[in-house]
Image 1: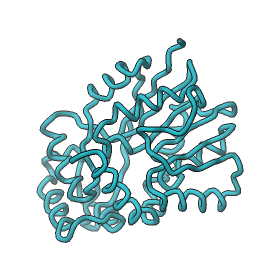
Image 2: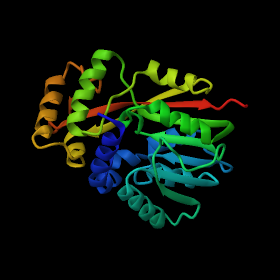
Image 3: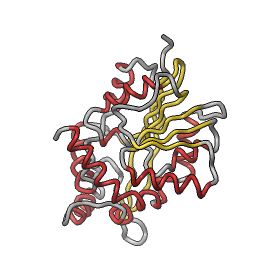
Image 4: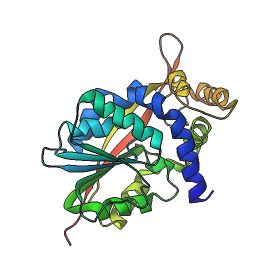
Length: 260
């Protein structure tokens, strides 16, 4: 698959997912929002860029604590959702752009924080996006990536298979070593890493997704087979009602841009 095909796939998936993604409660869970905001050290003087901002959930959260926030996403329908959320919250210190993370329409050193959540696993070349994040961050500023990660090649392969069935725009979950190496090669310090888990209900997530016909049942089968085995690395389990729950393993990586 080439980059343009992948981008068309992303726009197709997230045009359809725009409203369900915005309404899916796990994506705006208060505890995980607070954790990410605190690890990123968002403060009143910060000018923040939120890449692949989706429906603006994090951007609007950050805007309540920062000087100014810019959200950028490849999918126009997501930006429409973000503008609606901004209006509902009465926030004025936000701006929105439809654009590509590989070619940001901003000058160098424009932001004190460049941030992205849940995007790298959709990218064929995440190093390109990270390089752009570094370029638009001022010296001494923070670059923050939040994403799912794999713990071994075998676990990653199993997870990626299931996730691509659920969301065909998924490419792969990077390993922690890969993520760390990306930061180092991009000229960033660290990174420091904080972990958390995002608990979700499988059927609720599938209802907010747009898999190919028949793929949702295949995903359910894969998760049912993984109960008590955890080859997917997501601690699949049944709740008291028999529904399958699982937890996305997530990492928050923070690096600083070195002074020139």
